[in-house]
Image (cartoon, rainbow, N blue to C red; front, top):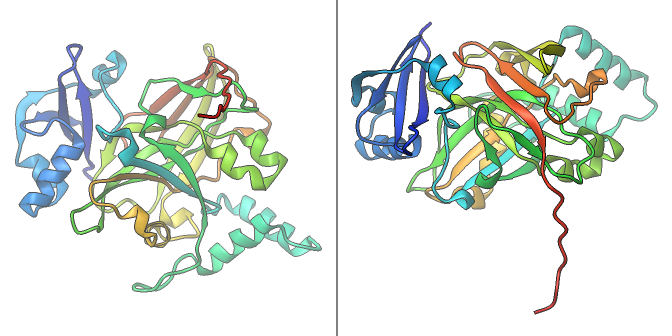
Length: 331
C-alpha cells in the first residue's frame, strides 16, 4: 500500500518548502512553503490535502534519508504564532499485549477496590468504541503545551531542571486545522514522542497535569488519509553506541480501547478548541514505556521510535534545561 506523506524542509539559508512523498519517492511542491499554507490552499480550493499537494508537485526530487541526516527536515506541522498551536493528549487508551490485558483484568478482579486509573481503563474498553453517530466513554485528557513545546526530529527534548524524570512515550499524534467555520479538519497523523515525567506521575496520579507539561516531539512525516488500524513499531533507547532498552509497540484503532473519532469528539466538544485558524496536535496514547521496565533515561541518551508506514524514524536526545528560578513581584 502506498503511503502518502507531507514533510517540511528548511534549507541552510532558511528557505522553507513542502515535500510530497509517495512510497519511497519524494519531491518538492511548488507554491505553499509550509504544511499549514498547503492545508489552507486545499480548503480554499475544496480539495483534499493529498490532491492539493499532487497538483503542485515539481520535478525536484529529494533524498529523505540524506535530508534527515543533514537536519533540514522540520516537524511535520507548525504555526507561525506558537500560541495558536495547542498540544494535548489522551491516556489509558491502549490495550497493550494480550498478556498485559490479562494482567490488568486480573488485577482489577482481584483488587478489593479498583483504582481510578483501572476503572477509567475498563470503562474505555467497554464504551470507547461506540456505533457510528454516537459518542462513547470519555477518556483521560491532559494539556501538553503550545507550539513553544513542539520539538522536531533530531532535536533534543529538554527536560526542565526541576523534573524528576524524562521518559519517552511512543505513539501517534493527530494533526488538525480548525477551518473558517470552526470545524476541526484532520490533516493526518504523525509519529510522536509524548515525552513525560513518569516519576512525578507515579508519586501521585493527581500530579499527572504537572508530569505532562513537558516538550514533545513529532516526526517529519504527516501521513495523509485514513490512518491504518494496525500500526506496529519499535521503541528503543540508546546510551552512547549501546541499545540499553528496546521493545515493540502496537498502536492504531485495532490495538486501542477507543476509536480515534471518540477521542476527537471528546477533545473538540469544547468550543475553545474550535477557534478558526488554530492547529491542534493531539497525542493518542501508548502502552509501551521504558520506565515501566525500570529504565531511567539520562542526559545524552537517545530515544528512537520507528513504525511503518512512516518511512523515517523519530530520534531525539535527552537534554536538561538550565535551572530557571522564578520570583513573582507586585507591580
